[in-house]
Every structure is written in C-alpha cells, then in structure tokens.
Image 1 (cartoon, rainbow, N blue to C red):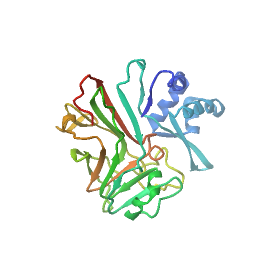
Image 2 (image 1 turned 180 degrees about the vertical axis):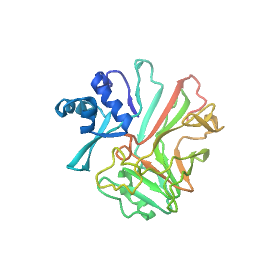
Image 3 (image 1 turned 135 degrees about the vertical axis):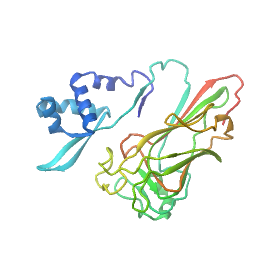
Length: 299
C-alpha cells in the first residue's frame, strides 16, 4: 500500500495513470499477473519504442515493477504490479488524526525462532539458514525479510500521542505468509499480542512458490518463500479484526500499555519487508486518535 499525506504528494502518480494507454497497460498486467514487454506491445498494438516511455512512467512512480528473467533469446523484461492499494489524504488541511510508522521487519526487540528459519539480506542470507543463533546478531536489523518455523518476534512500538488525545484505533499492516513444515505447504496459525494482552489468532495464507516476488533480489532462489499477502490487524472499541473480520472481543480499553507488539506461531510464518516480496512496505503501525480534553487512554 502506498500512502500520500496530501494531493500534492500524489501528483506524479495521478499524472501517470491519467493516460488511457497506461491504464490499458495496468489492466494487461493485472489480468496476467506478470507479462513481458513484448507481449504487452503485441496485445496493445504498440511498437516497443512507443511502449517504453509509458513503462518508464509507471515504474518511476512505483506502480509497476520491471525485472529481467531468462528467455528464449537472452533476458526478457517482465512487468508485475507493485501496488495494490493507494491511499491519498485529500482533506490534509484538517487537524491531524493519526500517526503512521514503518518498522523494518528485522528491527525486532526479541526473537525466539525454532526449526526452519532465516534472515534474508540484500546480497545473501545473514549467517546460516536454519540456525536460530543468527537472530541475535546485530545484522538482523538490516534484513529484507525473515521466516521462522515456530516461536515469536516482539517489536518495540513508537510512543503514541498523549496529552489531549484519545486513541480510537490501532492498525498494523504486514506482508505475511505461512511456511512449509514437514515438507507440506499448509496454512498455519498465528497469534498477536500487545504487551501481555492476547489479541487473537488467525489462519495464514500458505507459502508461495508459483512465481518470484516482485521485489526479490536476483540471488534469492525460488525455493524460498517468495511473497505473502498484505494483511491488516486492527483494534478499536468494538474488538480486534483481521482484514475486517473480528477475531476476538479484545478492545482498546483492555490494553494496559502500547510498548510492544508480538507475532507468534507454533507452525511458523514468513515476514516480508519493503525490499522483499510483493509490497513496498515494512511492518506498518498506525495510531488513530480523537481530540479530547480529558484523555482516558494514553498508552
């Protein structure tokens, strides 16, 4: 998901999609999930020269991702969608009612990995795969993504607004998937905590190998988890929700503090940062709040 804080910031993206040819290109990529430049040109009845500036424009604003893959006659340029959601704050002149943070997936506070595990770096794995001790190395903070076959990760949360504010909702955005256990590609269960409060559990989408993740580095082999699904966990005064579906009755009033966020699973999971997988996101953390003269909740 790409978030623009006001219309001016979104001008280049709006300009990029303000063309019927470029809209046709996006429709073709969405229809095929990934498509070569040659097939795009043929389907749209364009020459390669006419297609190229449109592709560059869409890539420059982060709407698509272009990668090189081996073809019958050397390398072939392949296009995939880089964004599936765009959020623009049109009424940005209104008083601020939220704070957003991006927490790199490797900047966890504590980790208790078990079994199959790895830290993915820009040029290779950080340490050895399937060796939990490398999760204690300082280099873990720079990883592009990671997976564990069981255990948990705990992140320190930025301090939310206090004083004359009342928090109305917390949201977490994360690209996540299950990982194979015992050689089987089965969906796993994952649980979430804020501090010591259990928020709820849900089923994860299975590990993906049908194609390369849109932002995976060239060295990253297809035998590894390739991409996840972009999911949203939210907590408000009505309960806790996973992609809008209630998973527990836990509300904001039951949270004693907003210091840590934990992800735990017996079967394991993979987390993808902004340079691994399909989405240009790390662990997103959004605090929505309302103005109040006597706050009842300050975190």
